[in-house]
Image (cartoon, rainbow, N blue to C red):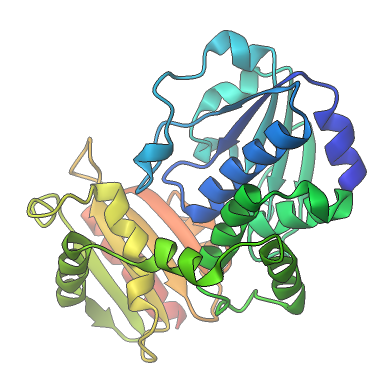
Length: 309
């Protein structure tokens, strides 16, 4: 794994880094962590982060989009993405060479070089393992903070069923680079009053069918808040601590087309990615996204989940 990663990386002076649309912190943490690691360990290389939507982390977006000329002359590294349609900038296809690093269940091959470890709980865990193989001393405090945040959020604070002793070991070694664990937790999970009020609304909107809990959030619901439609789905984990909910979902109206919905789906133990794949989506066994669904399809999806349980 280490050799193919380094050999591919060292062939190029320009590196562009991509990740999936509607990014979570594993996508952003792996993108930022890899970018920072390359900058610090290969200072002669030019590194560019690509993507249009940075979710709750708009401060991370660059003011100027990466030019087509740069991408065409680069190694494009695509992170945390199972299928090409979900990459948040399709121009990665124009790069001189592509490399994918991911931990999602295999859907399709779309890169020249693919490093995929589905047993890993997060792409940040996989990157951490690669960097540790190369040398733990190559991981700076800044890189460690990005990677640790991605592992922390994708495992829901090490509570998901794909959290393994290896996950804890990699996280521990990353943390040993000097990060302040309590401050990282505060940074990731502390919320402002506006978000607190939105979460209160979200909980009041929850309905149940069998062991399936779901909330449908409209654009009108979000008018009192500064939270965007896409950001609203990021709080799906707020429903995950109810022991009676075996599957939980948030569906939101699409920003550009309010006649269709996007959704975030989660489960405790039961695999839901096969059902998600039938509704313009996919993802992990227990964490998936769907998109471009009519309200009738949303209701049918909920029914399918209930019947599966």
